[in-house]
Image (tube, rainbow over all chains, first blue to last red; front, side, top):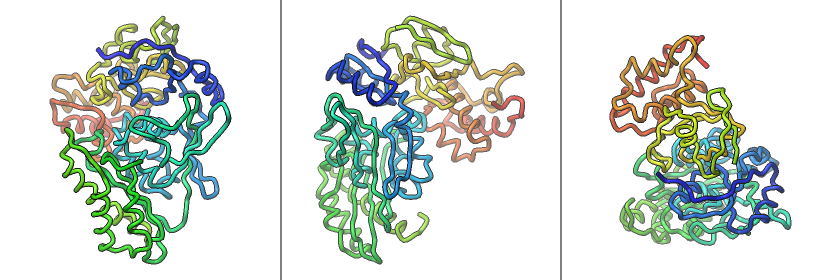
Length: 291
Length: 158
């Protein structure tokens, strides 16, 4: 029987109370949201918090809204809610693509957007997608709110730059016209992590790619981003030649390792192929095609 | 810590350790052993219960986190006028062999039909992607859920 080690439990009723509880219980305390990454790690003694602070009562963190040109997603929004959101699907098809293949439907009922980001698993899909979208994270701590680009949130596997008494409250994604996006993932079975996955968001002016974001998950890309691929396709024509070049750049810039999900060279090849497929779909969507 | 948890409409108060998982609370504290306990890693889905109407894997939820929420287990499926159509469907279409996954799949199916009374086969298959069955190959499970959708009389639909 796998059971976590002993800990104290507290429930926060407000964001500020969560911050105060984190301060009070010190750096060995942890927030628990959906718990679908934290509890399994606690069962395996890979995480040993002395106090869990339950933030599931913070309904104010459960909203999704379009505020001017910014899509705001509360940190406690469940994966299933993100998947079902019409406003999310309208502006960022990549989020819908990714949520369809994150864990399984039952896990998606509990797991949260903020929890996924704070867990900082380099194989996790949503963190890579939000990095490609150049989203920002809003965190509240004892000194107030601050904004952190998702691309700077993780400072290593399962580590973030968050202070011990900070709580992520919101994710903000800029909405810019002319965008199209898509996510492509290969996994062994429903609910599994990616063998490799890639996402693309492009902004087109006519046939020219004016800007791009490339997500690379589970293949050892720094911050889950294909920065060299983004630079390589910016300013180029949105055609098969560019997609092929993106595929080869993504293959070269990732750094996967061999594990039970596959050998490194296979994952490297996949990263390129999936980048190409995601780009192709993203470009088609930015042109208004239903794909 | 003392917790009061509502399960199948009935309120239960117990003294537990904060680390007690919901699945063990149901089985060991409340003797509701219809909810099974399998992989312990939120993969297999045999421990699936409904939390405020939505399926959740009770091996990956603390009992303390269930306070203030409505928990529904397989013991809560049966109605005053007989079995839930989902239960009838699993009987009629032989939706189980060993039966280990069955409580979890039935709870997932109930939640699906509450939300979407006429799901397509694709929607059924996607909905049960988090419930593993090693006996049936899923064919009869899908048929069972289809039977429940086709035979949901107004009186027994929640």
